[in-house]
Length: 192
Image (cartoon, rainbow, N blue to C red; front, side, top):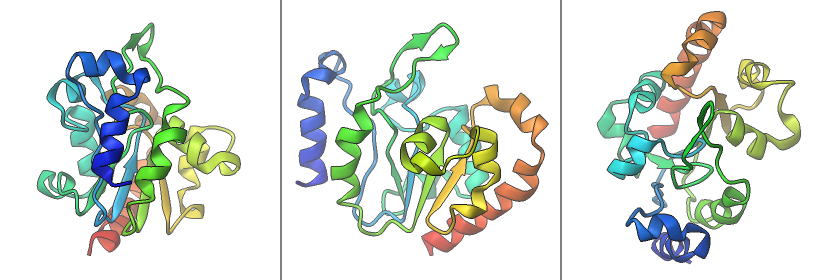
């Protein structure tokens, strides 16, 4: 099945009818030539409205961490963007609702099967890390991210770049001093 056929199947799935009814298609970027897969949680409200993944302050911060321009980040031959759910899940009492649990297990495998050029997978946040690292996550998100070198060269876990994570970043200065330079080097190696 091609990526276009997968996209149509996702759009036609009855579980996604509410978004289809509003004219909102599944929000992901996938090209067989992509070198880096970014797997996050779910599109934010602004990204869902614009139809552009990571089209918000979190996306700007992520590009900064990666050390890439927006043109590079938006190049599908460089970056595939596969959230754990391809639709904005709505607001909860303390932020956005989590991605649907059954979504990524159903739709990621056929898409990733088309991405033969992936050299690095970036796991952004707890949902992606819990799903893809399964038994190899540490006691919490911070410890998993701190152990990033143990997952290299294929996988790189990071926290979500949300502006709401400023307290976490302030409590963990090693993220900027140790992890971000290593992340930029891994990205540069993967996109050459």
